[in-house]
Image (cartoon, rainbow, N blue to C red):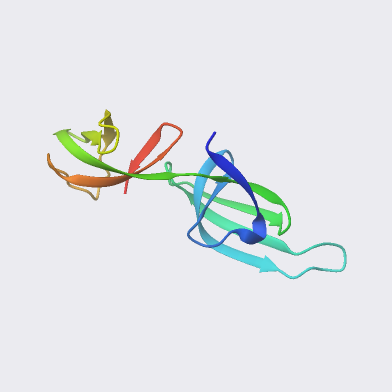
Length: 124
């Protein structure tokens, strides 16, 4: 699995973290000072990269969490059929079908950027 472990204190807004076994992009990160009976706590709020669900996580800052290694790749649109597009990866020349986001309009020969993690892909 392409992921690594990091301490919670090393995370920052805009980076990725695994929440509920799903890769999420961190939208908000805040810490609470250490109290009388424990260490400082961090509260992380994120949004799923591939499913867009909001999730939150509360951990001590010295705890370890999994950070997914999400690859950013280049592709070219081969054909468009309805809400799906056939994409060719520009590095490996592999072709695959992806769902086109609602706010995007693609046409053949367009070059796109997409995220990939464990077989899941999303157009950026």
